[in-house]
Length: 421
Image (cartoon, rainbow, N blue to C red; front, side):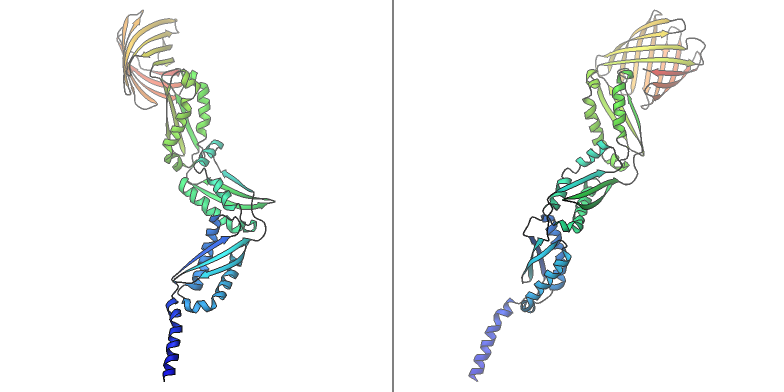
């Protein structure tokens, strides 16, 4: 009887460590490591692929039952890894059992590894300079794609392409949500080529309504800069309307930064401003004004008047404060080549200008009130004391060099074509 008790106690003691070490596997952590130079991003993708397999095999298993056949589990995981991780061979699999079971898998490339990576990054449907601007939103994208592939197995490009697609898609969605990306990985002789095409989606800018005007200097002096910026604003074509809307202030600031460095702007001490109006037919309106002077030349052709219907006027003004201007005007009527000269003062208040001038040799007083209703529409009221004539004119600017004005006069209404030089 005593012998039976001793045997029973011995068996109980021998079973104590196993009972104490037994546990249910609640979590599995898989780490795939490489003896070579495979990037961490690809190794994480490998680990995630094998994580699912390991969880299906081990979760909720009793470590006491797994332990005797642990070698079978590691062998099975190795065989699955050889099939799943294309381009890599499984060198070793180890397992540390517990409620959180750690599985470590050591892999090596089959043969050749990637050392030469070329990223062909293209932006479809946009101008070259615009493509450079868009690429600047993702400055590290090329380097990141190269780093993902460099050192990995040359035979793993198929599923490595999936990693690159996710990487590019996430960056594009974050930085350029108005665009989508297509990624392809091909092997060309001794190098791996990553072809990335980023293309716009949604409504696109199809045309640009562009103008550059100045009320401070004659527009003829701006012809060169006007042509250059006509080309620059055309670079917005092909961009998504939503992108232009979201980056409106940034695009305007970029244009202004370039305008301020233009020789014509510096030479004439001009103050540039720009307003972009996003849309399928977008608008780009540039104004170049001065806080020091105001010079303009206009020619008039009047329809509905029998005399004095071809004339011209030049205005030379100097600002003595932000609102106050003193000026001189020279006018000519071509019917009998009659000249007049005026000296005056103008008060500028927002979009309203009130001015007075004394005209010689007639000796008449001229009172003028102008109101800019919109950038293209202007209302003018003018009284000439010598002839006791009052005019009210509504002017529409067709473009920088041509306007049309309907004039209601107590003398005789007429229609005026205005050439803005």
